Length: 478
Image (cartoon, rainbow, N blue to C red; front, side, top):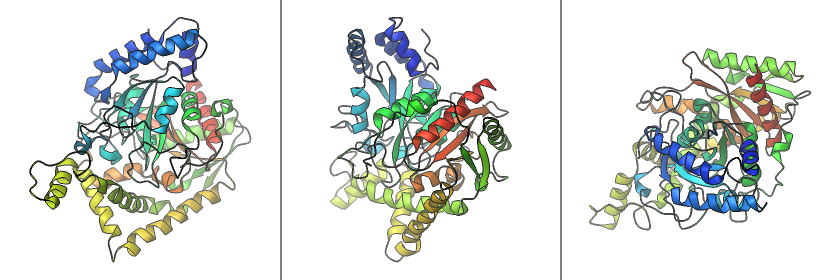
């Protein structure tokens, strides 16, 4: 049995025809995970849980009572809470912490009969663009193991890219779903801020974090979104917006759509093969009846600086709770309360997390708050207005997901600024709170995947998915 790159619909048809069982699926994926340990994609695997769920769902299928995601083998980033399972966030400080509750989106997945097979590796507390910052070792790109898979949700991207899971969930604070999706050659989507409940997501930057899916196809992303989206009273930022059946909009029709190409995203600094991919997508859209126009998002040049002020400020506040007093790592070398705080955090946090906490504490400190944090919030408003203005004329925007394809492991670890610039085309989407998706669109001369990004207006996931599906299908037929 080889379920490689088959869609949820194709797998479920086989299950309904008794050509396949969930038990066989679970065994197959568990064997794949075991054989793929060198990629380091998983931090925890749940064979007993998967087998029990598979048996239960096979019985439901026989009785015609199976949920929307029956038989779907899913992985979740280890920043998402699952009751009774470890929740490490890729950090030594939470190495042995076990979650006492389930996140809302975990309950939704399991209510629709998905089988969660394990939790994936990640940059510590989602801070990174390469999944090299994990306390449990880096994740490797399955296309070429000398290269990074992107981050911070690199484990989830690799789980799908290597067929270790059919779908996976990640979190996206500044591109942490879309960027690894692009570098690993899969589909990854960040929904509108507020679309998916953040209850059970360990916070990095609360005004930016959003949960979304990885999959092999836009159709599968749409099917997972239909399940995990929706209002949740336990999350004050959750939006009371109806959830559409996104998969019904994947009709391949783009005639009459108006697509904007932001000129700030197509500079000479972008790898030529990626610019060529955008040009090819433009031609295919025009042939199908879409109108393509250049648009300006003039405050894009301030996005990275704005993002790294806001996200580090929020991280400084959110990570203050890890002090060795209530949960997580506590230093055995401390002789006083203050020493316990200092040593526990010093031993538990990695270098990148420490760097961001210090930056965030600095920009929030007396005398610097107005100069940095308040000003960054004002610029964030200008960036959001750029998008609002663009969407008065354009249905969606088409951009590269990343300025380059994957870089080598270790290539940027000593240069934080170069690493931060890997997210230059993704952070604005989080600052504005709008939806964005990355789809694979060819490879470069080294065989490394290229990703295209489609951005939409707030709560207009259906248009983003529709255009992404068209480009996905046109790419396959080209």
